[in-house]
Amino acid sequence: MKAIIDPAAVVAEARRRAGLSQRELGERAGIAQPAVARLERAGANPTLRTLEALAAAAGFTLRLVLEPAAPPDAVVERYKRDVDRTLLRENLRRTVDERVRSLGEWQHDMRELQAATRRARSRAKGRR
Amino acid sequence: MTGLERLLAALGDAKVAFIIVGGVAARAHGSSRLTDHLDIVPARDKDNLARLVAALAPLKPYLRGAPPGLPFEWSARTLEAGLNFTLTTTAGSIDLLGEITGGGMYEDLAPHALTITLFKREVQLLDLPWLIRVKRAAGRPRDLEVVAELEALREELER
Image 1: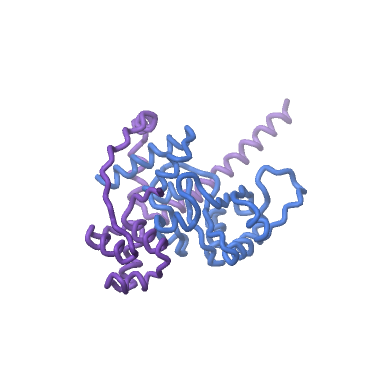
Image 2: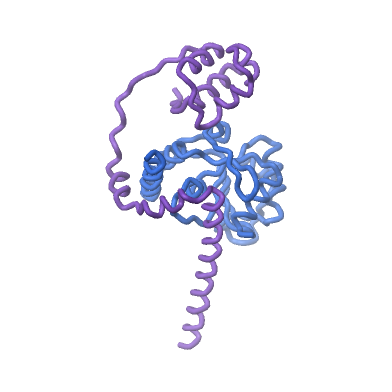
């Protein structure tokens, strides 16, 4: 069975499996289509009651299962100790657009740096 | 305009349906890592592939690492026949991923995508929990290092 880990995915998956449009699912559950669209968006946080209603409207029963949490990955935990969180905090203060723009600028600068290094190597070779 | 912006502008202006994954997605979420290529998962319906081909054609896409002069036809038919393409373009490198380990295809990822405004265009970006999930599933040592940073990011966001 496909694992689903967030409520928005549960709604979208139930609707898709039932072959319903957002409007059709909304009509069956007594919810307006834009609200269904909102619930399917990543990060949506519907109540359990709403989830149950939407699952039922799509012909499913919602079942919650408690499973033991996977133990933390030792390798990831070790790597995590070395993460420079000051860089992350700096980035989190920026907008998404600024973060990606700075990546593009860095890429450009790195290419310049590589080209300069190639030129220097080639000059050094010429002198030998 | 940087290469990354040119690639995203070309895709956005042609209304290509795609989700940004990989290093650029990680950067957008706040990662401090640098990457030198754009990874995207495009929708693979015929119309979208045609838009994708038209969008990138002016940037002269070619198979990355392949010797020049191979009979590579940049067309929707070529994209339909394959799943993943690692390409070089005049605006930089781009990987077109039909399916990603632990995440699936465009339709599987779409419910886990955030719509963000980037370079004045709306683009879809894989959300942080799913980015962690697919990186974990990829399972290469370098991916685990990225997972560590992404998990640290998630902890920072939850503080």
